[in-house]
Length: 367
Image: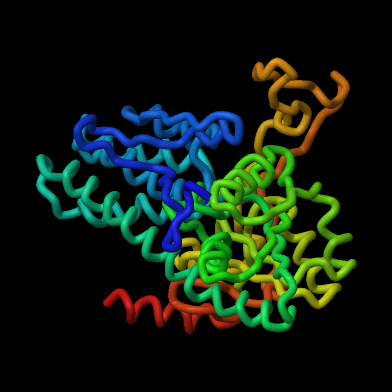
């Protein structure tokens, strides 16, 4: 519990280093075995970090992209340089809407700035996005906490059992995360809580990242294979599901790490609440339903090979499939709004069908 405080996780997934004019990230591809910090300086560094998932999670991808654009403008503040950088960044991860949203925020901020001020204005906007993310995720945790407290009351002293998928903690944001924020706050409030963590094949973000976070915070957890989630739900060993979102669209459909849809189906069949925690920046108001979301397809090697460490502690990659075997590797799937019990946002808990009301609330808060 050395790295846990009653207020928030003490680490940060990204830090701006003003004296070096760069950002420092945790290389998430090295977890859980090594905590490695990497500096991003050039546009190619940022694009590589996003593309290879050294940084991942919708909120963190957006913040990283904003810093990338600011860095690019520091080297060349011209509109042509900005346009090329934006296109290159947008191509790295097509599904996570926060990437586009953050770049549009920076673009709007620098629109009227003199050429010599564009880099400074872009950096100021990127730092503002950092601060907003911490406050937003803390608010998500505060709004999600009563849901967990209510469920805990029905347990009559027994440990609350929460099932999550992939990683939606501070590694996916800055200091709180989305789906893990209510869990962190519940733990700080004294709730006895246990988290079932699905491994999240093929990149194993649940096993490698979420378990690492929860262990760091001293929160009880158990990893399960992805295919075991339905059994747990059917056996009555889960009180609620709590996941994040990479893009939620206007009708309330939720796009998240592949495997989320199957958990939502099993949760509905067993009358278990299925909650999605997300900042409103993850909502794509221009997309009518989940059918319009571009689903990223990643390399088949992620499925056919398993990275890890051998008995001597050396990094190794083992091929799982036969040489002639091919793999299909979609990174995300879409959970229809009808399977979602509620959305937990920084402005409160809403039904998936009430997003227009949420949009009005968000606009009024920001005016």
